[in-house]
Each structure stands twice: as structure tokens, then as C-alpha cells.
Length: 199
Image: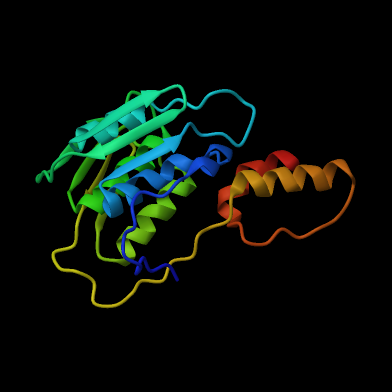
């Protein structure tokens, strides 16, 4: 259970986030809690720099301001806007789709997102939103979110699904060493194409 009950003591130092591949998913929560977020550029792997330009466009569509320098980036929530946020992504970015979804949640604003990424990770976040009363409509061309008309009266339970990339990596290691194992925690439908290729 995660409950942010402690009083705010200023923006946390998140230097270690430079070691996390998806540290940018912390931004909406930091904006909701502190009104700003300062993070180093994402790391965690050596496949090259992770493009953040679409993330910044998402935050700017919500009325936030972004700044970047060589050490990282910052996002500041400038004002409390109302009304539907409409964004069209130039390609189906999972990170930008999740950023837009979480920013809609933290601002309580409806969202219309064109060209959404509908990967298992995104659909899992939508399931979590539905469990607390958000109306979610996910189609190939548009993802539409509407906040609930009233606040939820009871806490929601949601299980974070296992990471399909980590599960597939483990499965490859097991196959390469001709071993046998059971990988728990990942949903079978999320790794179906990989399992077919492995067979």
C-alpha cells in the first residue's frame, strides 16, 4: 500500500534516478505533490539516449513548463487549467502515452490522445484508472479519459503486472543454457508472440 501521508519537506533529491530506465514516470506524481519535478536524464541501459521531446510536449499541453540542460530536466506546474486536453502524438510512444495518462489523473482533467500506444503496460494503467472510477476508451486512433464524477469512497487494489521484457530476457537465458524454469508474475497474453517465436 502506498500512502503519501508525510508532510512535504521540499523536492526530493533524485540523483539515483539516473540509473533507472523509466524514471520519467515519476514526473506526474512529483508535479501533483510538489508542483515541480527535477530529474536527471534516464539511464539504466546502454542502448542510447532516450528521447523525451514528446514527454515535454505532453506536459506543455497540460500547461506545465519544461526546461532542459546537460544534467537533466525540470517540469513546473504553472497554473491550474480546466477543460479537456487534446494531444496528437506523431508516433505511438509508450512513455508519452503513460505520461499523458498519469498527468490527466493528477490534474483531474479529461484527455483525448491521438495515436496512443496500447501496449500491455498502458492497458494495465488504464485498468487501474477504471478501478477508481475513470471512464477509459482506448481505440487505435484515440485514447479518451474522463475523471469520475465523485471521489472514490474506498481504496482501490491494483496489482502491477510483471515486466514482459524482463520475463523474455530470463526465458532466453534459460533456453540458451538448456535449463528449465518457471517465470511467475508476468501475464501470459503479454508474452504470447515471444513464446510463439521461442517455440
